[in-house]
Length: 106
Image 1 (tube, one colour):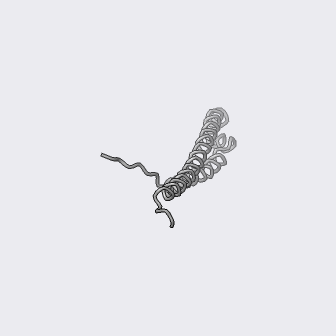
Image 2 (cartoon, one colour; image 1 turned 120 degrees about the vertical axis):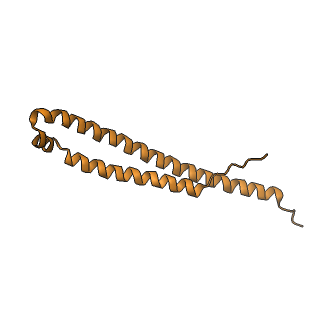
Image 3 (cartoon, helix red, strand yellow; image 1 turned 90 degrees about the vertical axis):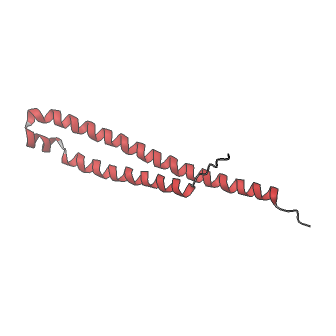
């Protein structure tokens, strides 16, 4: 039984773009969170003593979201590269295949 393996480079490119969109959206949300979680705002809401712990937590969350943003962006870029590579390979294979099956010209 023969199983075919095909990469739909168009779908891989779309997936890569969606990861890029998620990264962009996450960056916007993280920026908004960072502004809302500014140390002064936290201290005003819970008091200076308790605010330090919340401020540290908010800073860690922003840093973690930043790491996630970079990962999503990297995944999106890698998927885009994979899609381009798959398309180029398909085209090269089709050219080679065509050269070997084409009837000789007389």
